[in-house]
Image (cartoon, rainbow, N blue to C red; front, side, top):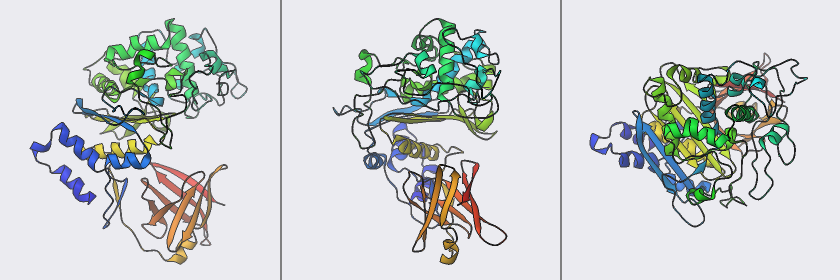
Length: 476
């Protein structure tokens, strides 16, 4: 029973606190996001979940009390059966952004760039064009790093090895062979949060124009080298000398991505090859800088600025969570065939990184992170316990229907027997469970649904409560 397992973790004798014992407990039983009072949840091992989700390889590093507690690979790196080891390289996807942001802030700290000046002052190879959406607007580095610049292009698709790869200027202008639209101002800068890989690509060009050297070299000189990330590079494509150390990218069907790992000239946004152990050094650098114990890249004041919450709980290049007593920073990463997650606490010296080499790896990364949170008694990411209520079928029937989250995204609620199901656009159907007549919970994720009725007793909308935020969906 998982509740017993969690209690056992909290009361293990001191002799079982070795790294191997921690690893075993983390990987032998991955706790679900939601526990139901009185039910015995299913306990699955990491190996079983990897098989179910067709995830060939996983790599994990755990930081505890200000040092790397353990790092280990699981499964295989590629079709030849070579095992994942601590130094196996994975594409970091969007986890490239926090380190790129750190480089940009280093340039600010050394007065090479300004956080709040027009970024066009730093650009020489290209300039952010004027926009009819925001006439006379200027974009700043602070806005680019915090995803508030109003810049287009959420993310990047990558390029198959052997196919034409655009220059960075071609990506910025959306000209062939670039496979994404032009990167432009679409909304008034500073007014809204909107995640933008395009903004980080503008920042990449500004760093290159300022440093007068390639992005991989400036990142090696400014961040990777000083931190000691010796198994990391922003080189795209990956140099042939490192190919033997790299994990193969896999599809959701468990097959290698045709042509191998994709190439990302948008290096700041998606181009980092690294390992969990190297990213653990990034975590330790940030934690140490905040405490005034490390300043290999940023001083304490600049690191504090980086981790100061702005719009939508984001700092400069990094997402923020937790509370004032236990704040944490986090970022996920998704490239074709690679999905990963990083979470680290600012004050406690704890954190972890999970990297995988398959589409669908984010699910197992979240499950592993939750298991690590249980093992190391983190204040967040723990399973929640819900209490199941009995609700008459006549009440359930009132909730059946389609609810619109956006004009193009809806959730359909259906009733099968006495079980209510939800199915979002493009997703699989899953059951939801009542904890009162109007409030329901999911088991697949930690989220709740609250149905609202009007003065006449008709259901007119619902609220989805997830991740500390509320999303309103109108009944169609």
